[in-house]
Length: 336
Image (tube, rainbow, N blue to C red; front, side, top):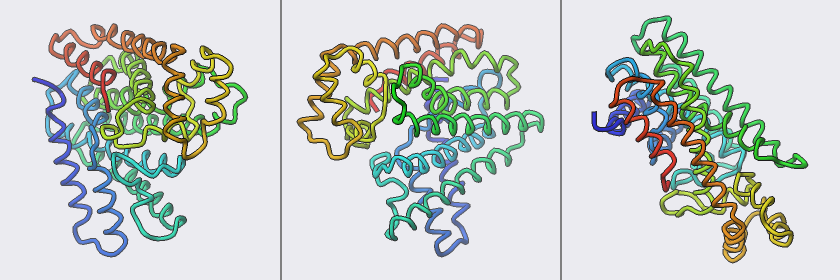
């Protein structure tokens, strides 16, 4: 196999087929919302979670149509979580287009209500597509339980994220815990474990040592890109995380390493809308000059190294080891 990424097109086709089946015969607002959900889900996603689910399955089984079809359950779960996240953060843009609650032309309350219900539909669809597949019942039951645990972890991480700005002092440990709960479990660890269970893989708990640190490294890189990335590549504004007051390794380390006046400059602007381009560039300059950007990259690299150091425990197959290393590389050394 050349790369697990070759299956992205298969995942896209399964998503298209699933939504077309759901849209068929519908009319009115139901059709409008499902069609919007299809467009939102198909828009620019990298299909990271389905691909990690397929990878987990591949640890013990040949990749087949069942796992590709089942893997779209995690892309539907992703849409469910993203729609809610954008409402919570009041984000206007997602994947280079309008956030779901910005797709309709009703008043704000109605638009957000439609988005919440659309997300609930995506959640229901994610369970439906997994249950449709002909896996042994015991494996399917365990996979469904793991899926619920993954969503629960993400929800707890979201709760922590919502109230974190109200803490008197936010630490790196606080931020890392949110990365574990809100990102690592549902981006890497949960998907791999779900796939591995469906294949009958015996060493499921070992995946934690790969999936959790890699998920943390992925989120730290995401935060770096959220401050220093290219907007056209990212599909969102690079000021959005800062204007939302998002506490990241970059910000926490800047508070620790920068001088008092620079810290004061950032604290007076973080969490406020419509920062000027000049002020935002000064914020970025402060982060660079105090060494917080370099230190954050080192932390991400440390978690990456923790992840790849466990690969040999997951499989004896050289091809699969190489694929797990390549996946880790693409997760951490990405530009979008």
